[in-house]
Length: 274
Image (cartoon, rainbow, N blue to C red; front, side, top):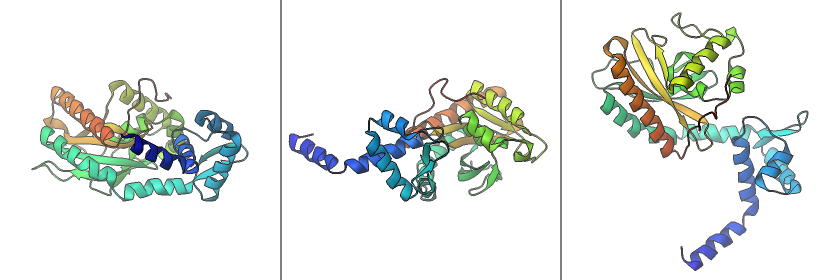
C-alpha cells in the first residue's frame, strides 16, 4: 500500500471510532457462550468503562443488545438475531455450499445435504441429489428433529453442553420417528460423546429406514457450528471400508465450506463436555 493510501485508510478509520467500537462489542458478545458483565467487555476490548456503558446503552436502545439487570450482564438482542436470520434468508451460505456439495456428490456417488439448526430441528437448505438415486425426505425447507439426523448430531456435538441441555432438558423434548434414536438427555449426551470421539456424526435408519448418513459440522469465524454437511446412502450398499471413505470426503467438504465462509473449526478440547 502506498503512503498516501495508508494515510487515507487510517484517516477513514479514525473518523468512525464509535462504529468500530460498537461492532467490536457485538462481535465480542457473539463469541461468548452466555451474557457477560460490562466490566468484562471493557477489559477484553481495552475500552474505558464509560465508553463501554455508553455503547451498550445505545445498542440496547435499538435492540442489538439486551441488559439482564438481575445478573448485571449483557447479551445479544433481538435485532442482532434478526440480522443473523436475514443472513440465512439471503442464502449466501447456501450459495457458497452448492458447488462444494456438487463436487461431493460427483466424488462419492451419493446425495448430499446442507442443514442448519433452528430450535430443536434441522432445516435443510441445500440438497444435491446424485444421478439415479431415489428422492429422500431431506428436501429443501424440510425440518427434522436434530437428534435423529446426522447433520443435527454433528452440530449439537459442537455446541456447548449447556446449550444442548437448554434445548433438550427432558424426555418431552425428543421426537420418536421410527422407534430409534435418543429419547432422553442422557442418551443424547452419550451419542454426542461418540460423535466427538469419532470426529463424524452418523445415523442409520433413524430418518428413513434402509438409509444411513454421515455428517460433519461447518463453523463460522467464532468457531460456532452453523450447519451440517451430510451424505446419505442406502445402508446395505455401503461396506464399512466404503463408509470410511465417505467420512473422509464429508469431513473435507465441511472443512472447505468452513474456509469459504471465513470460519474456523474448534481446536481440540474447545467444545464443552457434558
